[in-house]
Length: 265
Image (cartoon, rainbow, N blue to C red; front, side, top):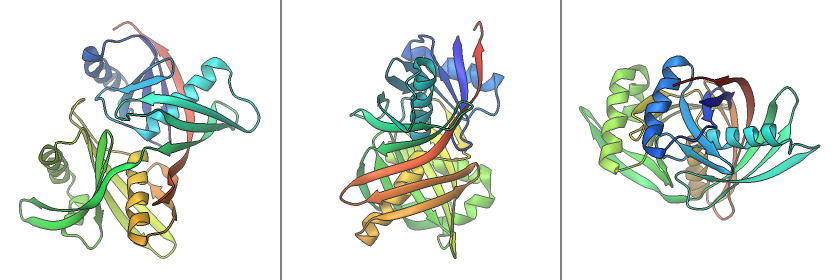
C-alpha cells in the first residue's frame, strides 16, 4: 500500500494512493493509524477523487489531496494553481487553489460546500441541558459550544465529552459530528474541535478542523447578516475563514508533506 502523510495545520492526515475497495477502507485506515499514532484521519485518493475512510467530508484532507496531486503531477507553477476534486460527503466537486511555498509546502484555499442548515437545537446529556448552535453540512455536522454554555465544562472532562459527541451524533443521524469549543477574548478567537466519525469509528481531539472552522464562520455570518473574516487559533495552528451569507465560505490554511511510505498489509 502506497501512502503519504501530510500536515494540514496540525490535523495529520494519511492519504492512500493504492486501490482499496470501499468496504476495506476502514480496516486499512485503522492499520495505518496504528503504525502512525500521530495520524488523525485517513483518506483514499484516485485521480481527482478523495474518499475518507468513514465516507465523511473533510476540508483539511481535501487540501492535502490537492497538494498531493500537485506534487505527483508537477502542476505547480508561480502564483496560484486551481484544482477541482470530488470528495466524499459533497455532492458537487470542490474548488481549491494552492500556492507552492517550497519544500513540499503549500498555502491552500478551499471553497467550502454550503451549509444545509444553520440553526440551534436543545441538547441534553446527563445533567447538562442547553440550546446550542448547530450547523449541518454535507457529510458532517457541527455543534458550537461557547464559554457561557453549560456544555463548555466538557472541554475539561474529555472522556465525558467523547461520550457526549457519540450520543449527539446518533441522535442527529449525522455522518460525522464535531463539538467546537469556542473561547473568545480581545483580538483572539480559539477553537478546540472534538470530532466523531461513526463510519471509521474514530473520535479525535483534532489539532485543527477545516469543516468546523467553516461551520463557525457560516454561523457567525448568518447571525451578523454580513460577511465575516475569522482567524481561528486551534491546537495545531491558525485557520482563516471568510464567510458571506450570500457568497459562500473560503477556508485558508497550510499543507506540507511529511513522509511517503510503501508497505505490505
